[in-house]
Amino acid sequence: MTVEEQLIQHAKEGKLLVHKCTECGYLHLSTAYYCLKCGSKGFEDVLLDGTGTIATYTIITVAPAGFEKFTPYAFVVLKLDQSDLRISGFMAGIATPADLPVGTKARIAGFEDNCGIIIKKQ
Image (cartoon, rainbow, N blue to C red; front, side):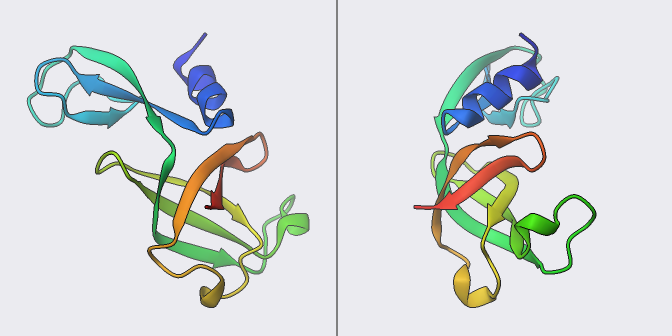
């Protein structure tokens, strides 16, 4: 199974696959080839619980072709609880900033081929 397939499978389970440096313990998204902190090339796979808080987002009200049925929606950045990592994802049903204050608790809720990682409020 490729790293991408593993990432998708774990996202469907509400988890995030990351690489942990075997030298210093620094966490990286699964696309890292060397540690950004110490330069090591040794990693081990770690699964993080996909919970966190909304760091920022953009509300889409005029969707690109193929996304009309989802409008309005938000493209969000989720800061994970267990690390400093941030991931982006798709959150349906967000029409105004009042619908999603920064700091809202959220979680990875799946993966859709059309949308990528799905994030929902907790």
